[in-house]
Image (tube, rainbow, N blue to C red):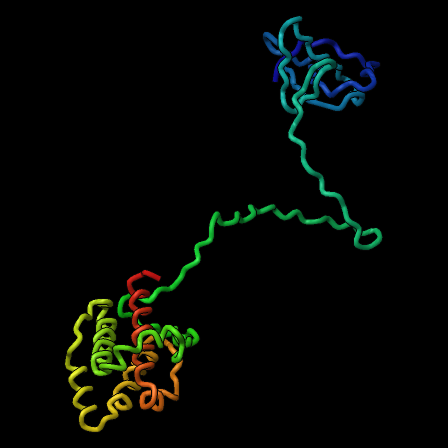
Length: 257
């Protein structure tokens, strides 16, 4: 604390109205040591000086010199003071008469920002991967008697054994993870179908329903209870429908759909 010059106390001294609290010095009475007297400094409100104390004004700064503001002290007249940061005062909310309650201020959290873009994941049938799971079963891509199926019945009508053998090879290639690689026209399945047809004449009713069941089970396609009857009466349509469905599955496996 900065020392001030001692001035004898005036018992009748009254501080001016509205004066700020300042530093005062206590009269040392008769206790003096060699050199300067010991002085004790205290701070009291203006207008409440007890007897034995004197009001001491703070020195005025010279013209052109900046005024230094000390925190905790009141400024002199004409001195600029930096404004402290304002605080928000909680306002009482009266829930009951005579009993004020204060609202609790909850911190404002950062709001989540919306994603820039949403990615829709579409599942594709990998090469040779079955579509097992809880997904709903679907119908055949092309109905049995649709125009697309009818347009491809020429080969099954003339050589059903070759059409059956080609479909069997394509199913095996899908299961092996090699879609679109079956190119054989005459194979073991074709020869077996041809031999049974020569013996009993209804090879389609023996082999075609089981072949179609491999597709419906692996790729979640609704089974048609009329496959047995259709394989006897409409065998070319069933073989053509199977051929078109295998084309769709191969393109899905290759990522072309």
